[in-house]
Amino acid sequence: MDDDRLRAIEDRLALLEVEAAYARAFDGRDGEAWAALFTEDGIYQARGRTPGEPGAPQGRAQLADYCTSAPYDGLHLMHLPQLTIDGDDAHARVHLQFLGTWHGEDGATVDMSGYYDVRYRRVDGQWLIAHRVTTTLRRDGGTVLPYPPGTAFDE
Image (cartoon, rainbow, N blue to C red; front, side):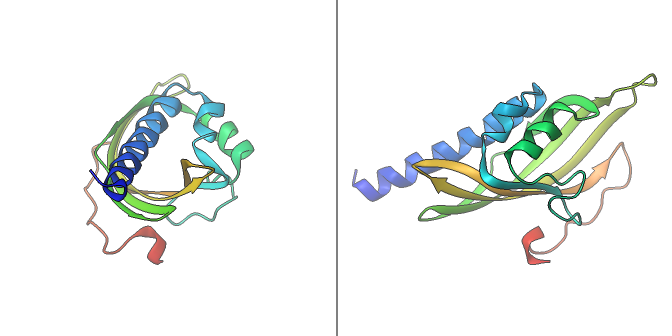
């Protein structure tokens, strides 16, 4: 196998591992491990939010706090990402379902389906998440929203 093909396989496997570690760290409320999967200036946001505002953390300190102080516990059910790799940059769409329980007396549950648009960057030989945007299509048994065209980064 030539070096380019081997590198392409290794890159895909490394990105799959990032996605698996992402779900496990968040579901385990391990903020430091979760934040370490992002670049130093990494962003997590819900579609339509502005990076850096509450609920749209930017930078590892905000990311770690967001994970450990989330007002719910749950389980990410992640699908395989559709990956595009270009040198030290990559992007993906990752469909997901999140099953969770809100903290508090009522213990309300959440059942959310949607997808992530993700930009990755290779930093010092390691693939990291540079920017992740969540698009919610369905929450708590409500109406399934139409699948929007393009990506969240097109807006």
